[in-house]
Image (tube, rainbow, N blue to C red; front, top):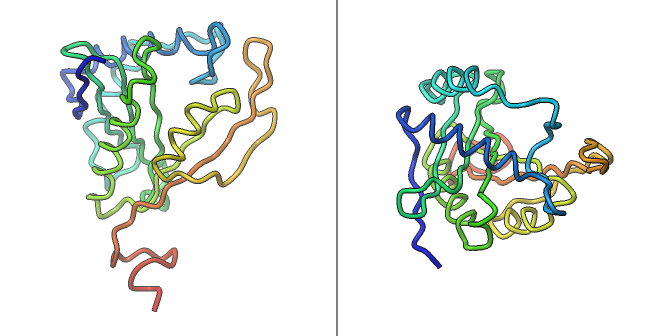
Length: 195
């Protein structure tokens, strides 16, 4: 196994990141593999619009709506995986972040996804504003669901037949992880309000 590392991505990495996202999307659902996104073949990713959007979102502070932070998984200098944490579009949901992740097929099952998750979860736990990380995983991707569960994510819901891709009906499985620090002001019932 090669030596992989994870690090935060900077604005200068945006083109590499977008190329990687396109490569992972092209592998989604191929040869019986689980799907990693819900876009059909007739909805190609607009890289130019994506670049502008990523630069804007990566530059947004996490106390503002629409922020995004990204990490890259590297095999030597090659970007082989990515993970994004995405802030909500409403101020009332800034205590939550959504995760999206993709690793190229050739680098799966080498603990890179676990490294990305651990890195991003650790970062989120250091942020005073973030109490929860949410994600969705498709029912045809039990390996990804198991990976998330190993990192503490719990299933909180399932939408049957949410997507139809490549002739398959896919359920959407919602998972969440509570990341608030002990003693934080978390109104969910963890911390000072739970007295």
